[in-house]
Image 1 (cartoon, rainbow, N blue to C red):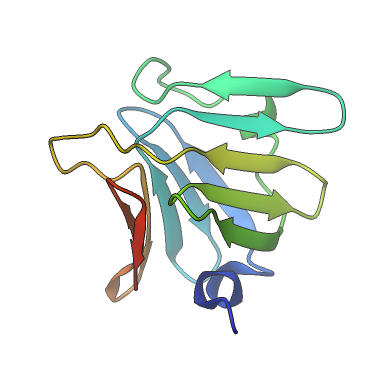
Image 2: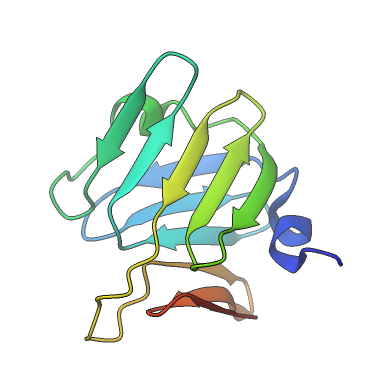
Length: 126
């Protein structure tokens, strides 16, 4: 079975990383990955944890994502997101089944609007 989110993101380059209330990865093709949940960036050397809303500007492994390409995208059975990059880094966003306010832990948008969303409870919609 084809993985539609992987097909949409594979090979796209990270053009910009923005922090603030949410983390935004701007990819080529005017696609954005927006993360409102805690996340981690791991590599063979380290694991770094990030908390959107606590840091106004991306640092460390997040800042080093600019210029790298998405090698694979996986949505876990519970609705978490894993972005694997061509550098070996992995950005992981766990599902947030406790969110009662309707906030999605992550979403992917394109030039025509929403593409993929993880809903509280772990569901993926396209």
